[in-house]
Image 1: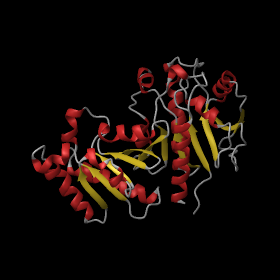
Image 2: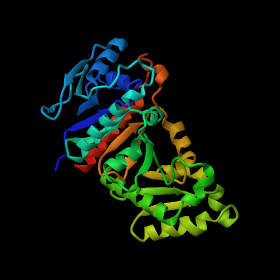
Image 3: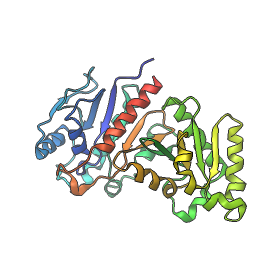
Length: 330
């Protein structure tokens, strides 16, 4: 079965650089039909501000495109704003609009209309100010798709890093790394590398939690009591896992040369290396979902909205990654 031909693109916070990125990207033709789920009026205004003169082609459930848009054009599933947008100025009245674009994209992936969704950055704070509990794209899409556990992975050319824990204070990390959580996250990472990245037998390097991976228990016992036994059990299920290895030596060419992904124990153990290697050309991939979702690796950059001084590199990598993942699933 071939993957659906359409991909959904959500521009995120309307006052941020998401609309700019979509329009700048449209200067060149994409290899797949890409549908921006956004206010057509917003995109027209921002196109004029940027001096781009982008042709906006209205599409929707009654008429989906069958071919990619020509260079200089962008397919738009018009989603009306609640309030006018001034670049760089947040307005909580548009919070529901942002969530509607995500709902349309996510539901479209679930029902097979879209092969995947690519998201530009949202502003969590202004959505919460509108009285809507919102902790991020990942949690929103997990709820929309009824997914119990998702895994955050960032990738750039030559390196993928997934996380056992994400946005936790450092003092809470060790307690959060339980055998159950580690096993669940590792299984999801392995399964999605197979299904969505087309890697038949993924080789995963696993970081230890403590300096020197605990130094035989002298620098912490989490490796001995939790990590090593869990990895051994998963190896018995057929997973190809190496570690736990000290993080300061794992991220070297000798180890990374033949690995498909690194599993880091916490946010700032793995992501500084990933971002040093590929900031501006990295992608955030949500693993564990029944749909394909990729995102940029940066925020809304309100101060740059409407300026034309933005780099599309991360969005382009997010698109390429989504296209590749969809092809692997076909």
